[in-house]
Structures are given as structure tokens and as C-alpha cells.
Length: 446
Image 1 (cartoon, helix red, strand yellow):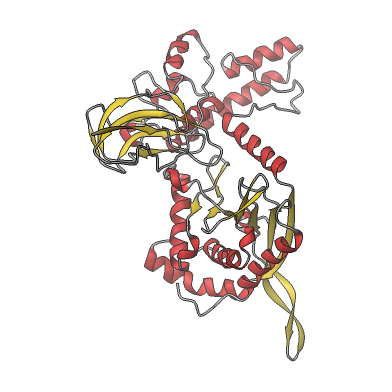
Image 2 (image 1 turned 120 degrees about the vertical axis):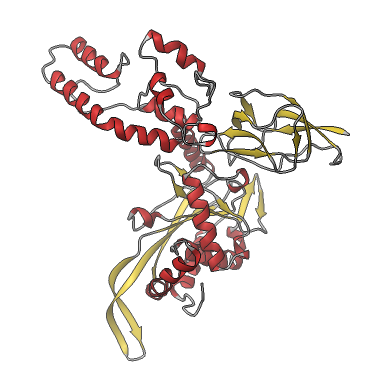
């Protein structure tokens, strides 16, 4: 028998801590390898953390609600397995934020303090994402406890709290109209403050008295995103190359096969897996784009792990990763893309699905944008934005001369780290991706 430490896993790029939501096992329980032991949350995702090895849970080192740094011990597991004296953590994950609503009356102070670390008055737990929504929407502790949860063990999910907000809208709009009517007749800043406080429950809103501005404090997640974007720009001198591609044949192929695919697989055939397939092929031809930088060393990645930016209902982005994307055929890529996107939007991603990316794609066309200049996901050195497909008049070259025709056109934007990717390489790479899309194999089956 040996006793090994189970540590807090790394939960995504640049995520250095996690919040323990709930222990699923108790001291003395037997645990199988990969069996869920506890629930952990980060600023983007909450998920179960599996055991890195089989054994018996001998000691719990961190309590529910504790924020624990990555690689710090959280439990002791007694096992008969040997690992050359090393403790292991194979899985990684991402939590949510831990900011609270402001108490609007003395009666609520105690209730709020009870769940300041995620704990509710009835000994349940709110994920930090739910807590942040509550803070932003000024939902009191009493209100929060009355919302029915549909998650595991009746936990309150993001969907639950957003549904509650929908039913709250009419009353809120009516209250705002009343406040606006009163504010129209204010005679002094003091009176304006009193009117604002009557609507906000005692917490003054940061906005101008003339109604032309509103100041919104960033939540923790937005601050983290801002820090990472600034850090990426500081580390990598960004350069962007643009190419316009004629994807008419590709569009016709997809239109021909999408209904059959949906009927057979029960899943949509989108353009994203087709774009990923083209990027994978180009990375094989230009391996010096599939790299990272460590000081003065260039690390060439042998695996092709494609990150795909997914927009969450909150408006934030998360980047799940398709590992070994070059091992998938188009059908496999389509199913994998849809699976990751769906689970990303419902906070069901696994820890290791958020790390290890070597190149990232952002399909800005889904927002109706024709092009974009995306920011590199560190420590990668490049990212591609795919614009919306638009019908345009274009010159068609044939053996019988040039003609004007209606074609499906699309812009590709390739942002890259100019420290290690020169303009020639960055430009040739995006051109190669466009070539693969323009010469798409229309005999390909899916």
C-alpha cells in the first residue's frame, strides 16, 4: 500500500486556481481510476474531476468552497498501484467566478455571507458563474434561494437563473420607467442619488446624471479575459494576412449532403469541420506554423490540436480543443465539432478538452462578419478567422475567355506572431488553406 497525493489539476491555459464546489466521495470510500471524485469550477467551466488512480480516499485536504492553486494537494488516496514515487494528475478543468450580490438590507447580510464562498443558506452550492450573474442582475440572496435548480442534486444552473431573469423582465422594465419619470424632474444631485437608490435597493449605480453615460464594473471573468488579451499582444507582435477564397463548389457540396447527414447522424453538417480539415492539411505542409516559443527556443509540435472558439450564451468565448485533428475524417470532425460546441455552451466540457491546442480557428462568419483580426491564444503563434460566405459577382476564367458570374466568396484572416512567423510564411499558409477550400473534393463522402 502507498499513499499518493491527488492535486488540483490544471484547468485550461493561464488558469492557476480552482474552486471546490462539492466532494462526491467521502473519506473511506473506494475510488476507481477516472471515477469522479469532486466538482470543481473556474471562470469558464465547472466539471467533475476524476481520480488519477484507483484506491481508497484516506484524507480530504481542501474543503468545499475553498479556492486551491493548481498542483496543490487536495486529497490523499491509498493505492496499491505504483507510479515510480510520483503523484499524478491527468485531468484538467476550468472554474467560474466568485463575486457576490450586494446586500440590500440588514436582513440579507447574514444570508449572503453564508454563500460568499459558494454556499447557500440550505447548504447547497452556487457555481461562481451563477453568483456573478446574480451580482450583475442584482438578484438578492433571498431571491436566489427561491429559484428552482435543475442541475445535479438540484443545483442552480446558468439556464435556471437566466430563465428566472426572463420572468423578472416585465417588472424590471416597469420599475425603470417609474425611476426615469421621477428622474426627469430632479432638481439636485442629491435627489438624483436618492431616486437611483430607490431602484437599486440602496446601491448607487455608477452613471452620469444627464443620462448620457453608464459605468459598468468589469466582472472577474471579463477582467481575466482582458488581462489575457493584453498579455498576448504584449508577448506576440501580431501581423494579419488576408485572402479571399471562392468556395462555390464547397457550398454546393454541403447543400447536397447536409440533409442526408442530419438524418443519418442526428447532427448538423456545418462549415467549421470543413475549414478545420483544410487547416490541418496546410499545417502538415507548413509545420513551422504549428509551434510555440520558449525564450529563444522554437518548439515544433508533432500533434495537430485545433482549438475552436465557441461563443457562450453570456457572450464570452471558450476554446475547446480537438486533439489529433489530423486523425479524423470529415464525418468525425463534424461530430466532434458539434459535440464540443454543445457541451461548451452547457458547461459540460472535460478538463483536458480545454488545453493543449497548437492552432486555433475562430469562425467570425457565424456573427455575420466578413473578416476579423483575432488575437493569438498563447502559447500558440497563429490563429485564423473565417468570415461569412457572401454571394458576389466575380471574374471566372475559362479556356473560352473570362466571364462575370455569381460566386460564393469568403475572406480568411490569418494573425500570426511576427517573432517567429514571417510575412511570407504567414501569407503562404493562409493562401494554402484557401487553395484547399477552393479545390474542395466534391466527390468526398460524409
